[in-house]
Structure formats: C-alpha cells, structure tokens
Image 1 (cartoon, rainbow, N blue to C red):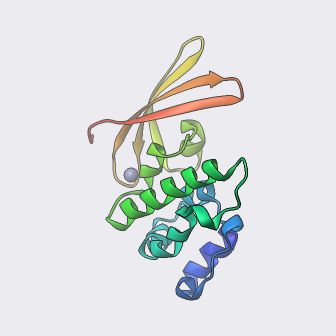
Image 2: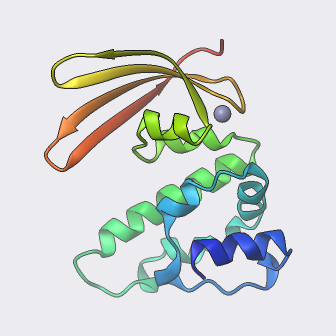
Length: 153
Ligand SMILES: [Zn+2]
C-alpha cells in the first residue's frame, strides 16, 4: 500500500478493509499528506498502524532501529491528529523546508533573515494560524530545519 494508493483508499472509504504492507508504508509521505480530511481518516484508523511500531514486524538488520523510530513518530503524530491536531504538527516530527511548505500553500512566511550559515524564518500555518520560528542550518548533506511553535497571532 503505497501512499497514493493509501490516499485513494481513504477517499473511496476502503481504509477499513485495507491490509498494510510494512515496507510500503512511508511515514515521511504520510506526514506530508496535505489534505487534512484524508489525514484525519488515517488518524481515525491509526490502530492499523500500531503493528508497524513492533520489533517483530521488522527484520533484524541495521535499519530496524531507524524504521521503528520513524513508525513511533508516525503513530504519535496520528494520535495527535485524531485528537483534533492540525497538519502543522508534522513540523515537530520531520524537517521541512519553510520555502517548500510556503510554495505548497501550507504556511505563509512573514519574516526571513539570512546570515552566513543559517536562515531564520517566521511562518504562520494557513489552516490554524499557529506561528512558528524556523531556524535553517546548512549541514553536510543538505539543511536541517528546526521549527519552534510561537504564540497564535
Ligand atoms: Zn496548523
């Protein structure tokens, strides 16, 4: 069940019957689902995802701890969404580039400052008006983005 198929299953009300294939579940892609209604349906069926957080679901190899960590974060996120949380909760769990999020229409950037090695942003979630400050640092393999929730505007 790859993410686009998962999304279609939700839209066709087939999520209930769905059998998840562990290797096809991409936490990163699920975190990034933009349609909040789809995300809420998935969150409502979050019990389907719990087996992915169990050690015995995954083969013992060098990536198992990493996979278990991302499945734990996915389930924690779905729990929060199920309790009414906004999709912008994902910024606590994954590193997202503020410019890319703004280009998708998910946040509005209200301030941006660059210095030599980093950029500092202020962003607002267009869905719930939560304010974030984001610090973006260049790292060896790309950028890290640390999102910190500020007060509502
Ligand atoms: Zn939000």
